[in-house]
Image (cartoon, rainbow over all chains, first blue to last red; front, side):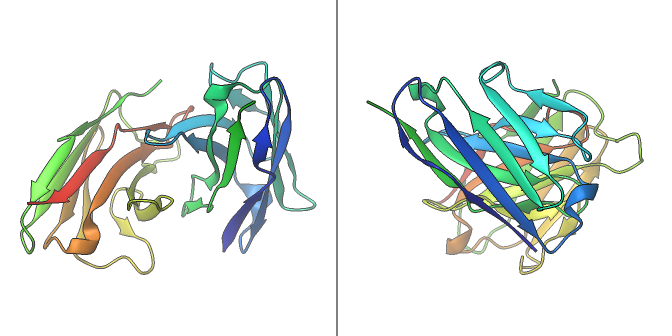
Length: 114
Length: 112
């Protein structure tokens, strides 16, 4: 049972990244999924959530209009498309299953800097 | 959004002594399905968060029984019966009963 994030890296302000989260060991399609981030030395911040089936999505005000969450249940994969990146988006991004028995990924590092 | 308030924000504890962290929510965390999605996480220095307790009182596999969770509605508590050196870190409560999910500010547990 695990979540494995990938796709992080160094990007210039205004650039884009696409994060992926590969799920295994549970019925991925049955659960809503969430992205959470943590900037260095800061607390945990919810970023976005997508319902099981993908019909409902929600975003933190800080990323609304710039980030898009999606899922591919045939591949047990969650995505976060991040556009118009800013320095304040620099953080470790975690993929999280919050309901049932929660699962927390190891995270992928996103650095936005020129 | 549901506001999660943790107290204390810092907790100096003597090794072998108990510790307790409170988490209060601005509204009931009972989900429409009857479950209460209150989770406790531990973050050791330089590590990703580690899941300790889910649905108020259920310990994750590998979590020692010195950790216990309790509470209902809007008031929840994480207790460590005997603090060990490896328990140092920041503890967060998280609610997932209402969207968006929200976190407490974190409580730093340190050894006196």
